[in-house]
Image 1 (cartoon, one colour):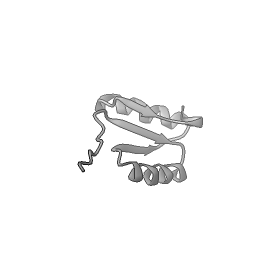
Image 2 (cartoon, rainbow, N blue to C red):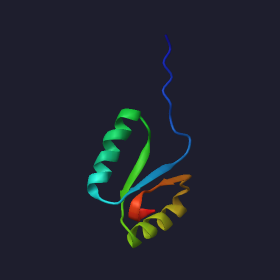
Image 3 (cartoon, one colour):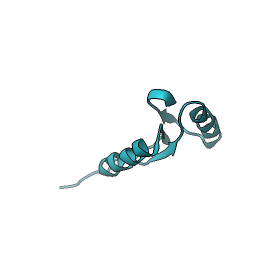
Image 4 (cartoon, one colour):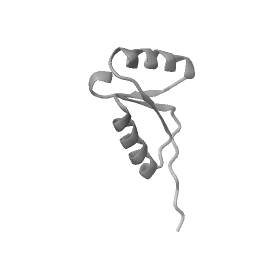
Length: 68
């Protein structure tokens, strides 16, 4: 039996609103075998983080709550 490992073709970044959510993101993504960069930024700082990602050719930015 051949098992195919799925790798992300897109660069994905998750902006977590706090360290706890970032830790949860790391735990979940390690199980899913997804390559996702995780940054911490809440409210106005999340906007700065997202703008800085524009220069890094990021395809998908995932946020929630106050970071959206």
